Length: 356
Ligand code: GLA
Image (cartoon, rainbow, N blue to C red; front, side, top):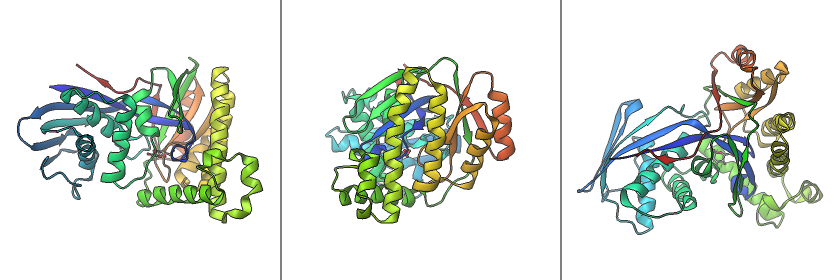
């Protein structure tokens, strides 16, 4: 029996920058998905999703996207990626259980892909690098769910370290972990607002960014400075320009945030988070009224150092940065602003691991 755990993540700064070959600052949280089970001698696949009381049944031979049980696709996609890499995957009988809120922008999908990839790696004794396991998760998502995500979620779920932020250069894929000041605390405020068109909106944002880079004759928006972008703004339509402003600004903010963190300047990190949210709201248009209300409420407390939406957007959660001691006051303000909110106090946790 093999049992693995993969955590969810918080995107601290660097919104939609990953697929633009830019920079991201994130950390793994202490909640995630446990994936346990055994390989079978036959071809049968049984996946028991304990929390929702559902069982998926199929075979490796008949492996294909499942239209009825969409959650199973994250696992099936990973099996397909192992097979694409020449690994003969036999049947399996596994159980997944989660303490990660779904659809909250905390990357339950990457946690599931990563846990499935770790399970197969440990059960089949393959030797894929951590980075390749992240790619396996990403490609599973592209092919089996149709979301053209970047690598932020999978890399954060795999490479993160306890009490550290994870800084990712999404061109070189160099990963650096940076200690978080001990007084830093984070509240994740899950608005429970969800958007039905998320996949379409996400892919549409990606498309606008990529066509903007092409119009600017750049490999990716990573290569645009704010000055360059404004000097060539006439090459873009108004939507592309807004999207590009968001990405270019986010890249700059991540670099500034890394400096701020290294110097222990939590106030500066918080200031950048508030600006990031404003840019999501006006330039990238991936916020929603509930998230805006949560960020406004956080700002009004004066003890919340920074707040912003985290992850894809269009619903989900905000991440709030504060100093230890202000948890109760800020949670109360968030609850008043958005009655459906669920506040989760979290710190930075370690990445995926085998539990044996
Ligand atoms: C989702 C995607 C990531 C990233 C974020 C936004 O979480 O899966 O790849 O693009 O949105 O930063």
